Image (tube, rainbow, N blue to C red; front, side, top):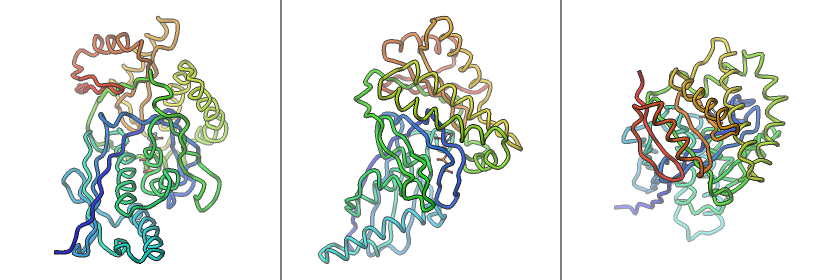
Length: 347
Ligand code: 2P0
């Protein structure tokens, strides 16, 4: 029996506070704007992936949550080809290395959260895939270099290579070599930041992000203003707010950007909807809380789905969660630090 080489890793989910929405190159996954995200705790939302290679494997296979998924899609193919090319270079420079680049891969990936329900599953998924294979191949590449490969799998995946606060710099080169993620601050640099995730629905979204963002980029008149005028300024302001740990500015920009992202979705033809009545209820509750408190206590943000992510500081946790529990009595949940996950049944 031929030897099996394996490596396992986990990658966390990241939730954008300045949203990526729109591609200038669909093949290389190059974005129309830079974006910023917060990486959530690995204890709560993460993908666990094991990559194995063996001379005895006859084809590349990927199992996602126990079901076989295609590995022949353009994005996965691009990622595997880049990683194999990097491994081949290592093998060419060191003949004692086993020729893993020529072996087929078996990849087993498990999410501990709903897949494709707007909880950034593709981000954690591709980040874990890239990291696991890079570890299997013992590649010396930095996170930044790996983020460039992960980006080709799914844009937002490039941000999940890091913990803490991460920027995906859009770059301006046509070959995408400068479109990669960098860390703005570590989780430890802002230790009292908390995130709460309300799972409003675990259903698969109706419009995929890839399709939705292309519809917006092609048809929304507001979109051009967003990417050319609003986001560049917000990117600078949000990066600075994170560096200075200025929660009010960070929170204000986060809410504004979530609202503008959903506004350009609505401005698309046909319009793209991701939030539902529970989502809008959460927005109203947080706006009321902030208005009554006379300061920004919590920020909400929604991705391509109805689930809410709230950011707040530790000292306000009981106020924020107390309000949510009182207003959404169906909320079943449990609390973990730094993330809190609760499910809110629909209807
Ligand atoms: C983000 N989203 O910045 C934004 C905000 C959803 C809303 O990135 O086509 O799955 O694979 O590059 O990364 C979701 O889009 O899209 C996303 P592809 P992706 O997190």
